Image 1 (cartoon, helix red, strand yellow):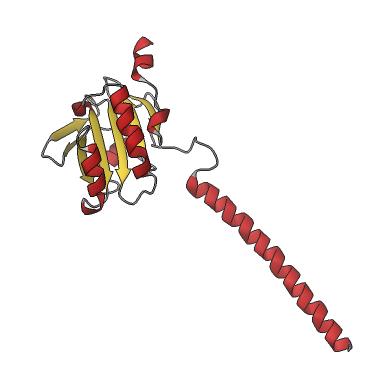
Image 2 (tube, one colour; image 1 turned 120 degrees about the vertical axis):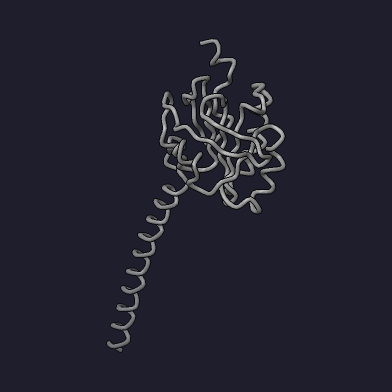
Length: 181
């Protein structure tokens, strides 16, 4: 009987130890999830450039054969990727932002990183309102803007300086408010 009682105590201690280790693992998983999703706040960097900085110059060829150079001459640069789960959700607000602020097609560059075959849905919805370039992740335009996460939206002034960056197009300032300054 003493052996049975000792075995029960040992099994109980092992279960308690396992429970404590499980709680520790759950806590660490929550911390990692917050770091990966940026849940520590909306101040997770969108690009390596801050407001007032000018991205490096770049040239590219749009999917329709259009030559694109920047950042001077562009008003808005949007970055999407085919592997981004949040990117399809941001396309309608992006299109609405362009309409609301009356930004012309030749002032907008949409950069879609990843294979062109995987990004066909983006091309169809965005090509009417923006010049679309597809490039590999860390391509020339991504590198010029130092993109750190997708989707990314960069609002530029006439000199090519960054006015605002965000993961949400609705978080960008209205152009009418900027012009009044």
